[in-house]
Image (spheres, rainbow, N blue to C red):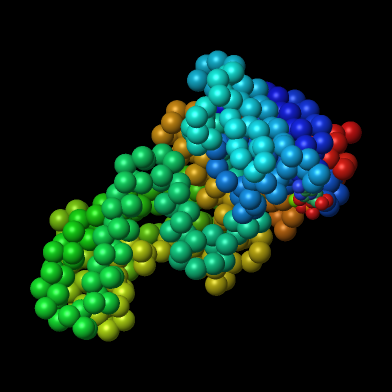
Length: 365
Ligand SMILES: Nc1ncnc2c1ncn2[C@@H]1O[C@H](COP(=O)(O)OP(=O)(O)OP(=O)(O)O)[C@@H](O)[C@H]1O
Ligand SMILES: [Mg+2]
């Protein structure tokens, strides 16, 4: 997928902006508060998702105006297409190839993207919930079946937790717990297996990128960690049995706490650099490179699943990276369209191919 033209009208501080991007790497540079992240955020909204900054749609309209417009001409599925997103009084309206779509979410999948912004460093720095959310949302994009399985698991988990809370007052309910355990294990094992497969694939691709970005000095490893012992053999039946056993072992604690203590809702993905935990021992630059490698690998897996290259948006990734890592990033991932923002002109000079745009107060000079 390639964006050929971009138009912003009254989107944050981008009053009128036209960009004609390169098919490869595009660097948007300028001083702080000029609108660089606004451009990436606007492009990201065309993927049909919410802002990666956590902003509400109405906040993205230029102050004092009632509507904002983002328009892109792009090449996908072997043809030129056009997508228009209008944010009018806080509501999204989308027009794809001249046809107004009933729902704003109808455009999901038309322009696939992967975004990295400084907030995404939480993937390494924060707790397991952030990493689970990352795997789940990545899987939902490429395996629609996963969304259903995860929903079923979450619903069953809520029902089991409600039952656990009722048991102390109604001990007769204890007999029904076995049925819930069985059902929870059926959905849970599917969630675990799909996540494990994804992490395995992600690890292969991400470690190859990381090897390159660190000039072969660092080995990146991603390991899916189950909240219960699954042993070596990860066959469905074995996992199901192990999950049931873990539920049975934690039953008395579950009842006293009114909560299920084991299962995929407690799993994690360990991120290791040269065999040590990146969260505990990684430097700022290593952690940043690590998340970048994971994000680029995510793009690669999307390509394998949907058959088209997603667009990569990298906000402010170059700071904290030494010049060799910056050079790798600017020149070695040009087999897909990339938009990178940065403040330093020095970084722009490292770009061999592609286009750079200097942004001053929301306008390109
Ligand atoms: N709804 C809005 N209307 C008008 N201006 C806005 C709106 N939302 C944000 N801005 C302005 O956009 C500017 C920030 O843009 P942005 O975050 O894209 O900067 P940046 O170039 O990425 O800066 P940095 O290098 O610090 O990350 C701020 O000056 C802010 O006041
Ligand atoms: Mg910014």
